[in-house]
Length: 383
Ligand SMILES: CC(=O)SCCNC(=O)CCNC(=O)[C@H](O)C(C)(C)COP(=O)(O)OP(=O)(O)OC[C@H]1O[C@@H](n2cnc3c(N)ncnc32)[C@H](O)[C@@H]1OP(=O)(O)O
Ligand SMILES: O=C([O-])CC(=O)C(=O)O
Image (cartoon, rainbow, N blue to C red):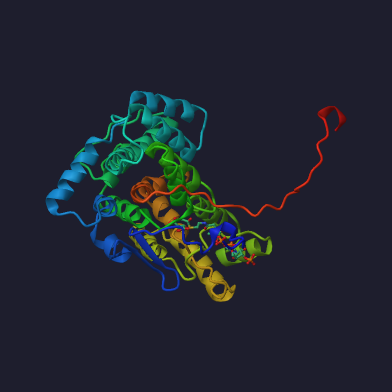
């Protein structure tokens, strides 16, 4: 066994997966053989969930049944809504509220005695959690606004129902399709930090709720999913400053700031999801006549990649760089951006947990011990 330290586990292969493949030099992402561009254009989020969880694209009748089952599972208990109201009163961050609420869902699980390594039961539990996350998030946003949560509508899509529960109005096609596409793009991405966190938890044979709660926690950090909120806050800061975006970013680099939404452990080139989201951000701007959010982001990208040497260092926009400008143009509050990422990625966490359970071995790496080996014991009163 090599004693070499692989900081951040870079390049370490810990298992096999059939879920998603990333080529970081080509900027390519596929889910179970399907290119992300094809899925973004033609699939729905429900279809992608089915693909990830069941191994192949559903037939029309399989999709109808799957969609209906998930829609029936959207409602959450009053106890969860009550806790969300308390958290809203305490001004808790939405990702923290989501983390707490997902953990609470286990109390109403209809299969509490399911064996932890039962893949079929894990899939049903994961499906129920995935169905309920939008309800939790929309309820939380309404409670923060002093409004009553809305009950889910079963006849709307996963994305459409979330927007309805958030705003009280059924969304137009553009908003629904845009969010649906964003959910598809964020559903899975190999062994990213939050997915790996879920897998580590599942590998101990802890339950699905523990694994997903851990995933939410890991995704919330600014080096991971939290970056989409940071990107939008950066663009708002640019807009509020008296500087043009390029001058702003030059000064930010001189001040030693990291630019959120740039850099990736696997991609050395632009993330293919960022390419799709960039186009969507520009289209939304053109349609509304207000392109400044896309323009600010794009000017920053052009400068960093073409003039500041980011391309040579393999630093390019990641999925978080343009997603925020898309959500912002849909009127979604900035601190709901990372929760929307979670609303999608829960599907990937569940898929990887099921895959892990199919060939489980507990994760247990080692650290190279660099501490003292012979310390002298001194009684507390003599220290
Ligand atoms: C959904 C997602 O999780 S996508 C990632 C979302 N996170 C972000 O956008 C936050 C900003 N980006 C980052 O912090 C990093 O690029 C990460 C966390 C994504 C990847 O981290 P790592 O693979 O460990 O790369 P690491 O942080 O070591 O960076 C390598 C070099 O690039 C630099 N670098 C990396 N990202 C950036 C950035 N956004 N801006 C400026 N410099 C950067 C680092 O300073 C480092 O330079 P050095 O070698 O001179 O010290
Ligand atoms: O893969 C990663 O490390 C981060 C990422 O882009 C994702 O989770 O979508």
